[in-house]
Length: 483
Image (cartoon, rainbow, N blue to C red; front, side):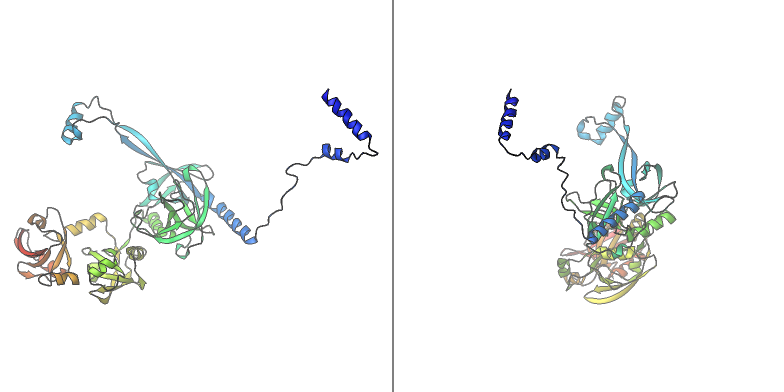
């Protein structure tokens, strides 16, 4: 009823008008406009921005087909937890396990899986990744960008730099080329590609935040590129690319406590390692045979050194290139081949990057006098061989070094050698010789430096008894040692 009233009311209103403009109703009921009918003004980005975007697109086109997913399986044997009486004493544990062996929970074998990334470097299936991605793996599977899956084998690994090479049986594969990481600059584009959290083909963009990062405690040899391109778990082993699509680094680590901080192994460091792995299946490195540390202002002052510049030599390995060249503990290496050294990693990078047999020219500060020493690098022996050589260097079973200038002033006789290492259960250890002791004489023969010590020790015979005159703190006394 109500709608009829409204209708007649409208008729009454308009009947009093001489003319009626019906266009209002026409527009009201026939309009087809929507919220999308009116578009905002189209934005035209600057050509430079468009070019950068297109560059990223081209990098993605080149990189994604060459980046792979790496899945690893490792067999782990675990015994379920059970309460152990007697405070886990080894004696009672053995008795308890022997007596109750039949009813104790048995060890079970589980498969531990992990995920990482890698990138193809040759059309026939060589793939670069991180050592920690494939370390201890019993099975390795590689999934390509086109979804094909292959079993892989380890060609070689280098735990010291966290680089590994694996191989799949495939051909005509897309692959990436290495660029020159030595030419990168802070602020340049950095593009990380990988499979974070299993998300295949993820590309993130950032910049080179820093270069030459070391002393992070991640690897033995560190010279990392730092980037803010997002690197997450699963990215390990993937490539860090420049704007040309060249590999400038291998993504290897993130800072757990921070966000947006990732590290990559420089391509120039990795290339030499990768080539050796593929050609020989192992790594050979140049070696000087020195232990080095940063020279702090406090150390410099305590040693009578005027300026805290260079790196301090704290150890010379026996029969090493450094020993043969005459380098000594307490020397401060200022330069190598004209390059100033501010951190131990500076020398480390030069040595590692030099072929075996390279002659390195060192500028050295010794007793506040500058000298120059040439050292020819040699092949680095295994750690086991180094330790064995050091511990069997003499019948006494100790390692010594020359006195530093300040130490000479504090000794009673202004000469001697300092004991820096004592082999456990050696004749010296059994006789009570300790690290820090200063040896003046052996069998009444003066020991003015480490060369005197070696000459006298080499003339001694096993089974003989010798006397050693030494200083410990502010006391001097003799010790008899049976060799």
